[in-house]
Structures are given as C-alpha cells and as structure tokens.
Image (cartoon, rainbow, N blue to C red):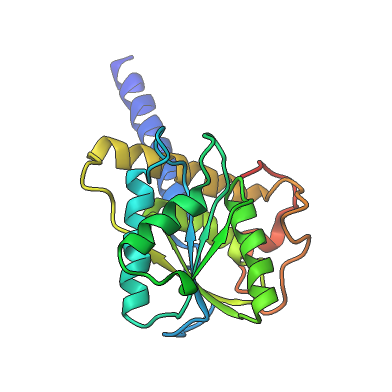
Length: 226
C-alpha cells in the first residue's frame, strides 16, 4: 500500500513538472522581434495604471526610464506613450509623457496615445498613429513579464518591431515579480494555444510576413480578451 502511494505521488509530481515545463516553454519561445534593426521610426511605451494621485506607478516609471535610455542612445527620434484612463481617471500616456519631459525628452519628440484600455488597444491605436506619420518600424518597451503576450499581438501586424524590456522597480520584491510572471505565463499559454477573443481592435488575420508560432497558426480566433 505504501509503495502504491509513493508511486502515485511520484507520478503526480512528474505530471506537475511536465505541465510547468510546457507552460514555461510556451512562454519563453514566443518571438521577441520580427526584424534585426538597430534604429526605428519610433519607440512605443506601453502603459500601465498610474498611482492614485496620477503620478507614474513604479512600472510606468521604469518603462519611461528605459525609453529615455533608448531614445538618448539613438534608437529612434520619437516616442509614443500609449495608454488611456483605465482603472483610474488619469491618462497613462499623459502621465508617462510628463515624466519623460522632466527627464529632458523634448515635447516635439513625444506623441501621446490616450485611448487604449488594454494591450491590444495599445498596439491598435499606436499603429494608427504610425500609419498617419508614415512610420513602419517600432521598438516596443514594457515590463519583462509583459513582453511575450505583447508579441502575440505584434505578430498580427506587418510593421517591423522589436521588444525592449524595462528594469523591474527596485521596490518590487521577488513575490511581486513572481506574481506578475505567473499571471503572464498563464495568459500567454491560453492565448497561444486557444487564440484571442474576437475584437474590433485586433486584426482578423495575421499580417503577411509576420513571424508566427506553429500553435498560433493552428488555433482559432476565439480566446480570452486581453
């Protein structure tokens, strides 16, 4: 009886390990770019909710800081700060743009996208801005855990893109970072295997020339909204 229980526990442990490996592999193998450019028409900074007083949250601050580093390194001559008023009344794009200006980024280089309510809309409305300005390449800045899910959206567009991870806020502990990774790993797994829910802000078909994962090509468009 004891041996049987030990075998069951061992089998259960192996099953859990296999599931974790599948989740991790699905998450880590999402492409982070579809080009090898070193210079882009613009940098795109994805928003996240502000603090209650409208000041940039720690994640917003680090995303803006990364964009400033890339801008000053000559990666692009413009920065789009994308994000509307989502969980709070304050516009994420404006909050980030204000911070960037205080750090020396000229207002002439800044474009504010203030309609997006989620990541899908970040890309959708920013793509509209890019089309209006004739821009065809973008470096996308966001928190490290957010980038694989973002790439699943970027894959649907024909412009050239590459992702750039910001730093984690120093005030974040390993529990905070672990929770964010856990949420994103699960979301990415579901979206990669089962697809996105239909959305007017998401292209119905993958753009020609995009780098697609096998699982994305095989799955339907149905899936959770993101």
